Image (cartoon, rainbow, N blue to C red; front, side, top):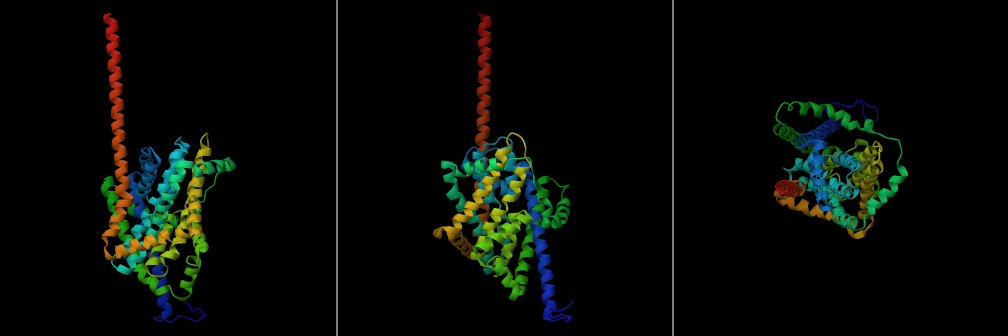
Length: 416
């Protein structure tokens, strides 16, 4: 081991300490990624994965319900990339694009739960937790406000659906694409994630999945807790300057960094989760994190676009259309919140307000996660299921009545 000047590093000096600290940072980042993967697999196990998402979307009878069920499906499957690919497949199978567009909007919202869970790793330190929770929820508020703005416009005028339809005609063809091999982080962490999940495969689904989720959360919280301390030690001088230049150097560089990194790892959940410890340690502010998370929204669209290119048949143009709608929705959202003066800081101010609330009372954090990602969507899902079941029962009764009437008419004819 040598110094930057080419001289050997003396054991016990600041150089060796720094080297060991960076190794510790790398190890904890790996544990964090494994924890996020374990949580995702646990949620997929208990929810049925992409098949479970398809069952949830079967109840999307109108745009509002579509948004909420998109949020629920992504919160359960823990991957907007997976859910958006499922939506592309559903459209290829005949689901109307007009119903799928709100699902895509909801999928954007649901994926933000992962980095919000990661922020809980700083739960024991009030100031760090405030910063972490702000960095996590600024993504939430961006997606929430995008839905509030774009959904009514889309329901009324359908600009995204129409633009996506026009653009899909330019690209329809026989070619397919894949960048699966570029997902280096997935390749490195998946063996460990599969090993941990495999330990519980013999258990009943609910029990095994809950234990897997609990282990994932424990890995995330422990890694974030120690990672924040190490980052405060090493993020000085050139290292801090490099991070600020790439992520906190302005809206354009932040958006570009978030887009490129998310395309490479094919997961906005992973990208935004990695940024939370940097915010918690004070290296980045919520305002600096915001453009990066917007870029992550654009980068995550690549999976659905590639899924659309693999579909052939009569509905291939509609599958590509919804994938392009996903991209257009995120690009327009980023442009809107980057260019309109009174919108630029709205998600940041909202995240700061909520972060300050959680610093004083941790109940705000848990109440927010449960209500936004599970209780509200779950209530709508349950209501749709109940009303759907009631409608089916009404149809069965009506069918039985028709059969009885036919039998009575036949008997009357025989008597006559």
